[in-house]
Image (cartoon, rainbow, N blue to C red):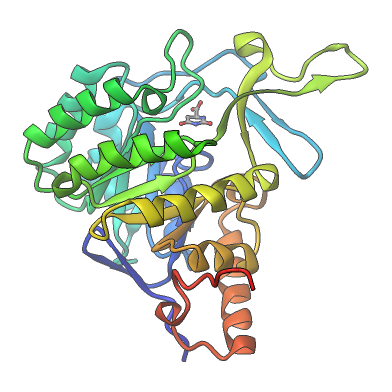
Length: 318
Ligand code: DOR
């Protein structure tokens, strides 16, 4: 039997594939479908302190099978919902899988308040701090402002949380930006279990030729780009972060993963685990069964018995 397991936040995941925070993660009904699939873990939608409905509709668009655009504006049921024992029980059932929450507060005080709450809740294996949402009107992407990112992580590290912390990053595109982001994360390495690269590529624009309008309504049509169009950017970010981050910080790969082969490429680039967002949105939770099956097939063909045999072993071009 093949070993597709991995460890994130000190918890064993039966497979190294799981869902990204975002689509189909807002309710226990949706999360339970992930738990019942071959997903190795379950990660909830980025929460705010209070329930909110998000940006005006229409706010999502699936372009041409190659890219998807969203400006959801963090619709979610509020942190207390994702931390309630009823939600956790309804979502996870008897799966025994790790359950992670995600937070994206309106400000630092909100994030600190939510982290304090999360820290004492049984059944939560860790928290992903989203520093990369591109869709909150009037709020720039935190992790593009390295001083603000440092201030946030400094305050978070002072909480001395018991629960492991992941940080969701936006895509970076230039050497000095990769270096600056990695430097801040490494400064707080004792408080960070993993970095997840990437959130959507912010502020993309899809134009409707017939209507001569943007495809979505909020923010003048600007939204986060995801799906296959961003896979190569995501692979680059995983590879760069794996090279630059302290070895104690895992890198979780996310961005445009549709197949087992895509997941294999992220693992080669050093991902400890691979999340699936847009394809989960399009295909539903059965995508995890398919992608895990395809990864198994590819490993068998290549003669690999466990993920550890090839993880991080991308060869130099020759
Ligand atoms: O593309 C995204 N959309 N990234 C996020 O972090 C949040 C989400 C939304 O709700 O707008």
